[in-house]
Image 1 (cartoon, helix red, strand yellow):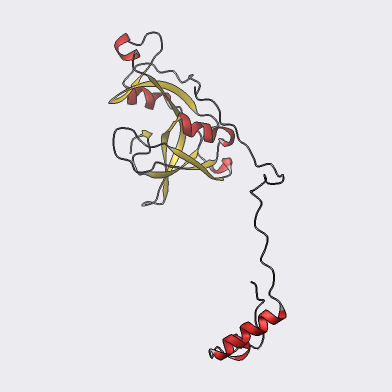
Image 2 (cartoon, rainbow, N blue to C red):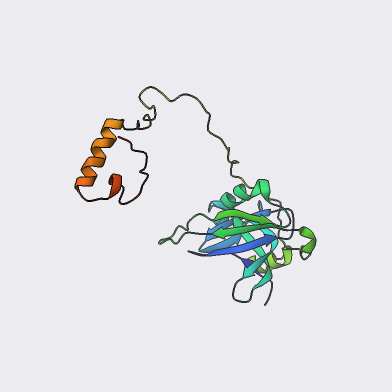
Length: 208
């Protein structure tokens, strides 16, 4: 099959692995299809349409039917690149998926790191420019656009006492010997067996 761009569609998921160490980016205008934006030389009628960022890298896609990895140019969105940025490297294996949606706006592309494989076992990375020139129908293409989305800030919980009125409930107190004896007598009267434990010689711990 010809080398092509792999995009995750509506309700789809795919597993890909990176052959290089970088996700390169460009900007497009979405006019029913993606139209490559060359920057200042972009026609005014097209350039007035809001920009969208797309990232690309040389990779391989897992094809379950054939149990083979197929080379492809993997496309990711700005949101997905933010998730992948800190852990993206040659040999990283990713699950990419979109939830099924209805309407004009597609669901967010999600990325999850599955594993890191030995880079020495992989094919060499390839140049993605030729494939992207053919995909967008342009003679020249530049992949120097930086993802414009602000990086995500990761946080963790801080241990401290709960605020007043939000304390966790205390654990249940064990039943007293008198309460256990009363419960066992009631169970025996109902025919539940020895000690009220349905035949067990040693009963459980009883709680209120």
